[in-house]
Amino acid sequence: MTLVAAMSFSLSPSLSIKKVGDELFVLDRSMAQICSFNRTGAFIFERLQREQDHESIIADLAATFEVDTSTAQKDLSEFTEMLRAGRLIVENGEHDRDRSG
Image (cartoon, rainbow, N blue to C red; front, side):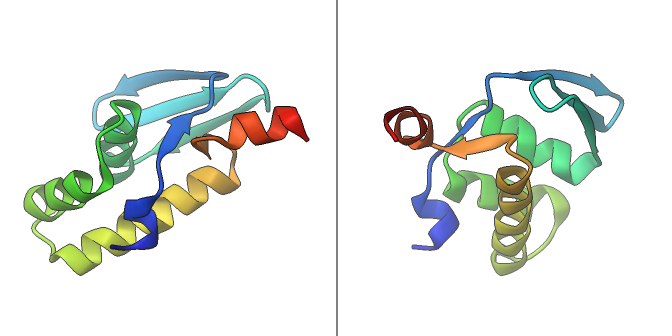
């Protein structure tokens, strides 16, 4: 099991999301920033939004974009880390830890 597969994420509650063509635009109201994601990023983000498990996201990435599972796993890991760094997603339980500390 990989680190990313073991984690469970939730979207930040301050997000507004709009899809235009293959691109996805995400407004983070709390940070007053807009992010845009290409087709691959939108593909991953939409599955995270649906709370799809990471193993099935990896399988979907590999099948849809015709890459091997190790590449899909790496892409998912890098993308989720970027989202975490930008505070667009939080690891489940992180909201509770923030409020208690």
